[in-house]
Image (tube, rainbow, N blue to C red; front, side, top):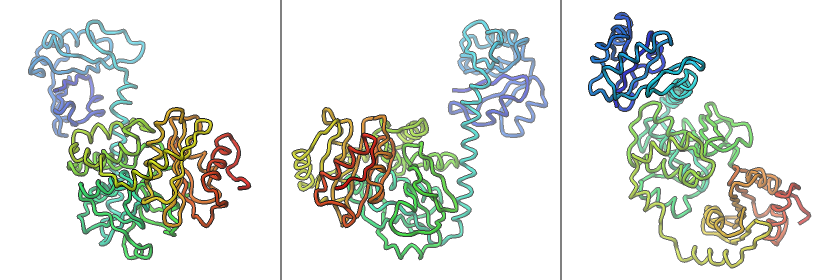
Length: 455
């Protein structure tokens, strides 16, 4: 749609500039030739003429169906609208007017300058600030020969997608930056994601970190790892900070539902062309961390989701989301369902040994569908660690706070309002009866006490 922007001065030009609206560059209608010439010199399109004369609008409108925005003081507004309507009687018109100004007659919509600023100026300012942030991190990484992008030990779709997006933001080829993890990609969906979208996630040793010139971390923070990192170069994350983030550059936004949303904003701010492969990865990252925008999603997540949805390969996405499940995993799920315990709205299931770390989280999501379950607490053991995953249906208590209170004295524990986890070394676990101790600690924390018990 083409927009005709009418103003007595350069107000609308200063707000909107030459940016296309509705897919096409707008045309500015102003009263002075000098102002029209200035707009044209700066890359805009403009016409000059008497704003109360029909002839200037006949030049501005092509089909008569274009949308018009009028920012003219009240004293002259009626004459301007009358002239515009003669030239384009069917055009939708928005009038920018202060609260308390006389309401224009006819079929026009009134928009206050405050609302215009919120909808136009603030997004433009945020985009400019994001552009500046990207310029800064690009400059920081520009001369580095070897770049490491670290993700968590059992990376999820949000981490994998964010790492791939950061490579694109930095302009790094496949060999120009390594996506690294100390663990492995375990969950079937995540393995399918890396295979179908051809994303190389390399398992590295902690000692290998020092071999890189620059180290970035996405969807994680140095404090989340048992290995000591010291100060790294960049952290981009949406998890709450459990300790001061030791990084030269950092962008931590706990209010966001996914780190993939932050990286999508980076790509859009610097006008990077997003390929179907990258869009599919980022879309899946947002879907996975927000349960398709149902859990902890913000306006930013929704905007990123809408942008990526039209670019993604949905056939590939369906293949990723429905991977083959090994028979052993189905057997373990059957045992977990059989051994489940529902206590005061909390469903507990202990899996025992697990084939991969993300299985506890996968089952915690699934078992939240059980009737009467407001919380799920699913635990399992792998490689000398006990993993406890917690989900809720939007309870008053934040899952991260409850998990931290219940298990924070034993290991790493925390998370968001609706999802959280704890990772504890089995040698530090205080009792033989794992399932009973988890239940006691969690229920005590949920009811307002401390997680520590005599067990």
